[in-house]
Length: 498
Ligand SMILES: *[C@@H]1O[C@H](CO)[C@@H](O)[C@H](O)[C@H]1NC(C)=O
Ligand SMILES: *[C@@H]1O[C@H](CO)[C@@H](O)[C@H](O)[C@H]1NC(C)=O
Ligand SMILES: *[C@@H]1O[C@H](CO)[C@@H](O)[C@H](O)[C@H]1NC(C)=O
Ligand SMILES: *[C@@H]1O[C@H](CO)[C@@H](O)[C@H](O)[C@H]1NC(C)=O
Ligand SMILES: *[C@@H]1O[C@H](CO)[C@@H](O)[C@H](O)[C@H]1NC(C)=O
Ligand SMILES: *[C@@H]1O[C@H](CO)[C@@H](O)[C@H](O)[C@H]1NC(C)=O
Ligand SMILES: *[C@@H]1O[C@H](CO)[C@@H](O)[C@H](O)[C@H]1NC(C)=O
View 1 (cartoon, rainbow, N blue to C red):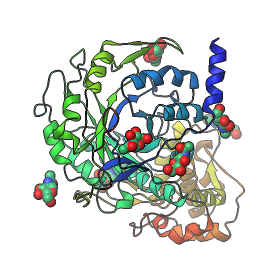
View 2 (view 1 turned 30 degrees about the horizontal axis):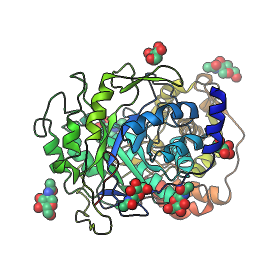
View 3 (view 1 turned 60 degrees about the vertical axis):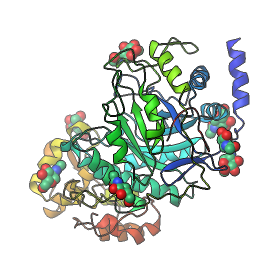
């Protein structure tokens, strides 16, 4: 019986479901084919669970989607946030079921194993490949609303240098979407609520150039606990801070649980008159119950869930949320100016260029042994870089100094410096030893585009003078090489419109 149902659902959902893409105008989201504003009423659907090394793709299992979507509809959901999807899986059934339910998806581009690490930030080719693979997969569904290029990467003053790498990821993902000719879709960032950095963060990601800045700003905020108020929670100040922001801003996580049960009284404020003109709603954290105790429901098995106390409170508040709308046709954004960059902002890292990295790698005559574990790379880097200058792979988000090869994979970077030192030593065998961790190998002489790319990159780098560029491996990449070479939603019960 269960099998029969599953098959029926599968057949039905293989057909594309008609749904209208969302577009951004000024600081608001709208349906593209009519003038209705989308106010986000969303739970965050975090299936990543409690493990940091693996995750479950929430959009890959139609049985689970079939179980959860009616529950999401029951609480007027129009957008969900998913934290990690596997771009090699098939998301058609789940996305179509969501489309039938009028539900849009904002997806993070990273996953727990591949993301920009605040303690050792880089923006390199393998991460670029993951980001663009997720875009390639989800762009085919009209109910994909947008992407987060990072979540709480910089979360304290001491980790702010990581934001240069995230902003480079925003810039390059946006350029990729444009170069592929995909429909217009936003790339944003979800920030934490740290009083030391929150204003600078919001300014930094929305300053200088539109094509480098975020298309929407997500705010993870837990300052309304228990029976708080608009002023006591700090919501009033946060709202003033974003009154003139030029792109949509919404809560990308909310729902403080230091007082339980959570009664979600913040929903009246978030979707009420004081906040609705500034915020595009919010995403409650979160749908599933896990060890961190933020769930609205608890999964029993693949077809059943149980609703928790918070679910009922959330449900009654969200059903009373009545955000007022804005008509797209009669809406003229007034807050079009970008923010001023914080004084500390430095140039962005270069665009990952797989072609350049592969060329360099193929021409390296001294390389790291394949069987050396990547956990030993750091030690080897510090040894080699004690013998020779490693400027070509340096990447420092504070100073804005980036080597031409700083956007290659760690292994390629290691090959670059091993080979550099070996050549400087006249290719003597002993210069490619490193305790048996390195070895000489046959090389491919760089010709054609490869050679042009490498000559432009040189062995070191200087301060960036250019921006952007295509991450593509095409020959035309050399046109924008300057950059490499020199271092270079929404609220509530649906939406309302007026
Ligand atoms: C993905 O699944 C859908 C629905 O089951 C199917 O029609 C489609 O062919 C699949 N796509 C790929 C690439 O396998
Ligand atoms: C997707 O959106 C485009 C543009 O609005 C529309 O032409 C197309 O019919 C939509 N496709 C589906 C399957 O909804
Ligand atoms: C605009 O389209 C959305 C999605 O189809 C729908 O929910 C909304 O009611 C429409 N607005 C109007 C005024 O028809
Ligand atoms: C993760 O959560 C599941 C289900 O709640 C539990 O069975 C499992 O032991 C947890 N794993 C860890 C590493 O905490
Ligand atoms: C927003 O813009 C208005 C008009 O330009 C200005 O008076 C106001 O000070 C600005 N507010 C903030 C928070 O920047
Ligand atoms: C890697 O392989 C070499 C033999 O080619 C061996 O001598 C060395 O011990 C191996 N290293 C590791 C870390 O396994
Ligand atoms: C980046 O440069 C600054 C200023 O020189 C220095 O304090 C910081 O340690 C450097 N960061 C890294 C990761 O090397």
